[in-house]
Length: 424
Image (cartoon, rainbow, N blue to C red; front, side, top):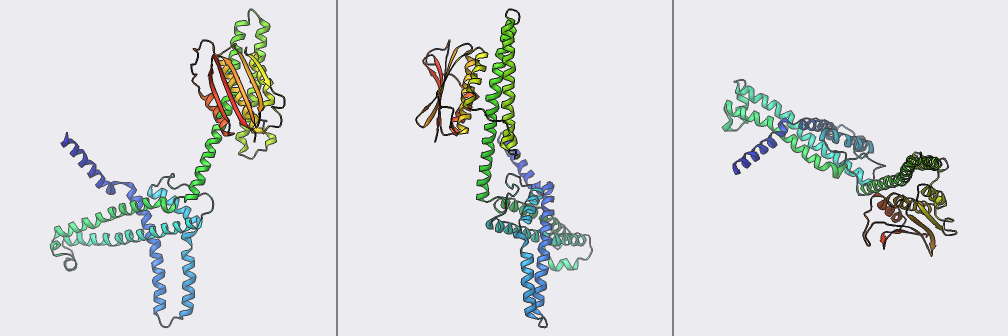
């Protein structure tokens, strides 16, 4: 077993050691580094030209100094520009295989710190590129000369510059192999350094990360809100429709009038579901700049009588106690969320306790709006706790978003849902 483990470890080590020689990522990184080396070479040539001009006594020093200062500004500005940083991010993704999670697309104008980090990345890219490019320009001709010398061509020069132990064809071939192997391994090392530096230097700063986290949280909250809207509205309509369809199928032969009433209730529930769906679609279109007056209005406590009528048509015995003024002068969000809580509680009552009486009470208690829905739980042992699904979870989220509190559970033989919304 130990021998097998040692063999497997040796194979993994061999694969790891040969990866720079066989991986396409090394070639992509090499291309990226050579580009940096070429740009670094242009900077070095420009600097060498100004040094040569300053060294020439016949050159006017003042004019050269002014020209050098202007040139320094022109060639030093690109690393600080936002488009250059964007190009560097795209290049790091393409040539260095850095993921979009570490290097997301820039959002908004860069800060001063971000510009300096981008300039540091630019300098690191050029420095490593210069080293790799110089190694390429030295290693390939040197390896070529070593191989030719091993073949008996022009051995005198290498005999003077190579170590004594290499003064043989075998030694020159070994040095040629080492020189050529240094290129991919050096490129792999430079790639590793760049990949580790990419996120700190090109990634978003702390402020941008916080803004992205907040935007992500907003998107998740909006998705949750839309999911709750669809669940409550469409779920209620489907529950009522299913019960009414079952009643109509049973009564179509014995009581055609009752069957027709059930079908009419199905039609009304469908219309209400379409209106609710139009409201949810309006919320989706709100991000496209659709004005609020062109979207379907959200249902509120003033629509409770119609909701109760739907539940009664589905066979539930619903008693509504809507306190005078409880549906008036409320914040729109509070009235809408309170309506959805009643809707979901009624849906659960109709689904799990069909035919049982349901009491809906809405009242003002000081600085709070209190909504209570109660229905008996036939067949449940006293004190047993029901297991809530998405409906209870959605109701709790609705109430919590408005800084209220929700209680849902059995009291004696009755299931009671109580939501309290602060009015301030």
